[in-house]
Length: 332
Image (tube, rainbow, N blue to C red):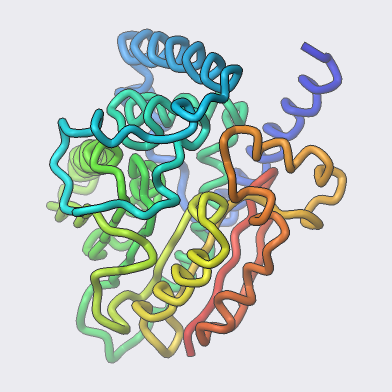
């Protein structure tokens, strides 16, 4: 390994942690709930299991990336029949085996190893980068709480929730009666999300002495949300847009704007930085497209705010943390 590259990666991680901790110190959001020594992820058995899964997955990913054959780049849906799907068909873009994962997002192996593989890929920065979504979400929660005319709980929608890891961080900071809905296309990832939500609830109920309703976890496409207009107080989407064709990004932005409530509803988009966000990284940024990310180069050149402004939203904040940025918008 190049010592200069290793040093830069470690410095990136350190700065990322420092920025995350600064928000915690300011009281913007709380300490990560999973940092306790009794959390299941800290058990020796879990460490060994995840290490074994990661090594096997990494070997497969490197082999498929080296071959880069058509069979390595596409999902074989005939292999994904061990989970019940509520969809009759999947979008064309979803046939891509992103990151050269085994059968893309449509396999149990991929879902089981996703969290440890992404944390390894980003040298432990993944969770801290995702938490850039929290400040705008917590600000919206404050507005809802201070609305004297409000009689119902806050309603939050997370699009492309994956394994539900961010969902647990969000729910741990939001009022415990928040009605949280999380959707994804992969039935495998949704099962992991349900498990993560159940474990978080068990842990939080023990400390809060309160009963907490489970999140509503469901299968659906982001560009065709199965909800009425003006349903949610906040809509969050993390690490999805770079995997979408530009035309679908426009559709998803429109759908997010449609289902969020007016008079202050928040839409939060968190994803990879783009060209110009950190110019020193622009040259290397395109290399991520080599991880079987066919829409990534277009993504880093896309005018993201434009999609949301066309849908009637106004830009609010932009936050950078390492190689992730979070944009927030408001529906007036």
